[in-house]
Image 1 (cartoon, rainbow, N blue to C red):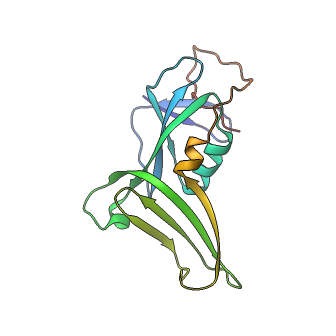
Image 2 (image 1 turned 30 degrees about the vertical axis):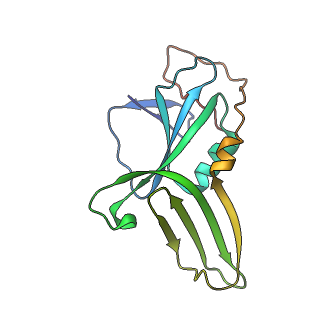
Length: 154
């Protein structure tokens, strides 16, 4: 089953299939209330992954993988790769930027910033940050007869 959060109504809908476009992330999660490890969170971009790691409640985040399209890897098929680090770079005195993804199988850069130029650097994801995530309970009340997400993310 696929569970999808409607951003406008905050309702959780279910479906049988979906499609993704561009790189995204798969987080292995465990419910801190039931101990179930039967779901993974699909997160659409690096910024949202940073938000998820900071604010997700009711789950332990065990691992993060990056779903890489062929346009990124140069291969013929999508690949699921263990994520090691995401770094966001911003040029100094310019509007240019880049995000660099490092996985167990490769390093990928999206953006037009020449990394040899002066820049600022911010780590958005690292294995250390994942290990430092401490699961926190939320105060939400669930109707177990309705579809729900394990993670509570504001």
